Every structure is written in C-alpha cells, then in structure tokens.
Length: 370
Image (cartoon, rainbow, N blue to C red; front, side):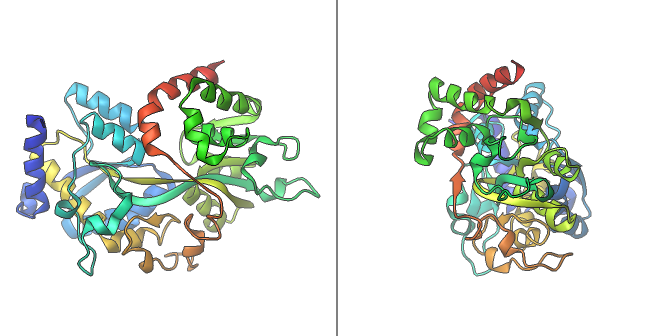
C-alpha cells in the first residue's frame, strides 16, 4: 500500500501536470541538481534558459549529482528537501525509487506526447527503466588519450585492454573513484567473456578478481570524482589516458581543440535523466512537474544535442539532431550510438548495480585505502 505522503504528492503531481495550477500557484524559484561542466551547460542552453524566459521562474543550479543518493537520504531523514529536480543515472534513480525518495511518474499523464501524437511511453520505449526515472540522454563512459604522448612507432590505443598495458603505453591513467565500469573493464581484460561479466561480478571471487586486475595499474592511476577532472588532466598532459563521459571528451577535442582522441572500444552505454524528490510541498511539486513536462518534450531533447554529443532519449528527437549550435559541425557522428563508434559496446546493467552498489562500493573503497 502506498504511503499517505505518496498519495498526497501524487494527487498534487497529477493536478500540476494537467495544468490546473496557474503560475501564481507554483514556486517562483527552483533548484535543479546536475553534473556541472559541459553537460550542465547543455541543459542550461536547451532547457533552463528557454524555461526561465517562458515562465519568469528563477533556476538555481547545484552540481551535486554525484552525491545525489546520499544527500537525498540525509534530506529525507532531516525532513528538509531543498532540491526540486535532480539529474541522476538510471541505477541511482532505481535506488531512490525503491527507497521511496523519488516520485513515481506516469509517462503518458505527466510527460508530453511526440509531435505526431505518439504517447510519451511509446516514444521513450525501453529507456523507461524505472517507475520514477524520466530518461533524458543516452551517453557512454569511454577513454580519451593524448595523441602527442603515444610512443613513437606504436599504434594509438584502440582496445580497452590497452588501459592495462603500461609497458606499451606508459603514463598515468585517470579512472573514476568508484567500482562501476572499472570492475567490468578489469574482468573483460582478465579474460571474462562479455556476456559473463555480471555473473562473475555477483560473486566475492569475481569481485576480488576485478580488484586484482586493477591492482596491476593502481600505482599509475589518478582517481577522479567529478566529470570535469579527466578532461582537465588530459588538457594539462598529466595523464596519458583517462575515462570520462563521451560528451566531456567531445568538448576537449572539438571545442577546446586539445591533442586528444577518443577510444570507443568497450564504451559503456548508460542512461541519465531526471527524478523528482518525494515530499515536496505542493507549489514546488507543481513547478517541478511543469518544468519536467517542458524540458523532456521532443524539441527540447533534440536541442540538447546541439551542445553536447549525447543521444536524446526520445525516438522522435533523433531525426531532429543536426549541427552543433556554435561549431557548425554535424553532431550525429559524435554520438556514442553512431554505428562507427558502437562496434564494440558494453551495456551497463543498472539493475545489477542497484542491487549490489552499496556492498561493492564498500569493498572497493577498502581496496583503495590499502
């Protein structure tokens, strides 16, 4: 049975999405949480600025998405939810939903249909992976490397296992300071077949196998926490190669014209999108739902792709992806989903990480501290 808090919030949500609230019954300020850097800039241009112009609302940006689960848990415990809309990866959305910290969403009731009348549920299709998650983009985590640091006479790195080959490709690596992706890549490069990776990672022995493989490069790793870290480390020449989001690397390569190239092999596809925290007062909930309806329509998702190389989550948005708004280059070839870039992809298992994240996190952090 749903809680009273949930039922009351859902009632307010339905009224808000249906447009029964006038603007003066919505909050005139909202806090939107995201990841910062090039990604937040793309949201600012595609969503926030048009919405502020349309409504007159003030949007406060917070760049705490990498801490969203812990912070929302703390806010809920304190009974003081200060965020209105939060950008999270799918696995974190599932965790927040399971814990009752995110609102459940009915796509066809609360999200805009496609321009041809196709329902939101059909337009988003299989990317609607949870009851509380509103998908926004398909992105990948992959590696960039310094082209001017490739040893003379050696082919540039083009295989995920080149990350672990410090003899052929000497130099520092940057890896995210969490187990996700690192554990999968380690197992792939320790001989585990792609289709068996998560079965192996379910076991204590498999987790240790992944950590043992990571041990082989641990002394050469600079660990990152923010999405902007690897692009900066690459731009400064402090690392030879590093993992980060493909959109961040696009920015370094195409916008900043740094001597950096993309290595797409075993890029990890994932989804990113919005959740609305449970427990918002009625005026803030109405504002949040109004923003979500606007920001996830077909045009807005296509607009974001003008600023960053992430694939829009709606099927109806894909044909509308054109040129970069400032560089004038076609964006389709820079998408992780482009066939030339997706010859060998690894599909992120968000359900696995929703179930195992806390336990493996603890083991990974203990390994880091050794």
